[in-house]
Image (cartoon, rainbow, N blue to C red; front, side):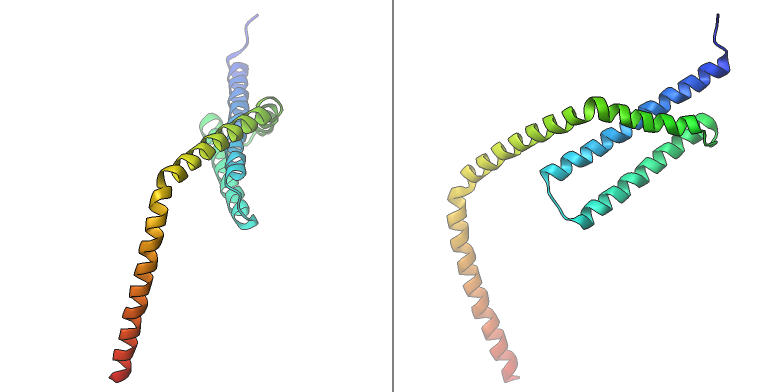
Length: 150
């Protein structure tokens, strides 16, 4: 018994929509990892989510346009949602936890190395900045006095 070409094409379309859903949720996991590494306020979170949903909308539109001539099919949107839920249930926790752990460890070690390497320059740099600040104050005072005499 063979499957007709039309049914095979629709099954392929469903498979593409499921993979797209998994890819979109992976993209959101990258955003979640970034938020855990670099905490920021509600305004930036809202902006990031807005851009994410614009990307999702564009990706689903391109998929529908290329695979189905732009016709919206319920099973395709269901496939995207199913792919997102499938990725969330199987991979999401592991991906986020491992990547956050690895990135925090790497960044922590990098910070310690940077602090160790630049600590001697910190004291010298601080003295230079104090000297420059004093010289700028003297210069600004001289400019003010010169402007007042005009």
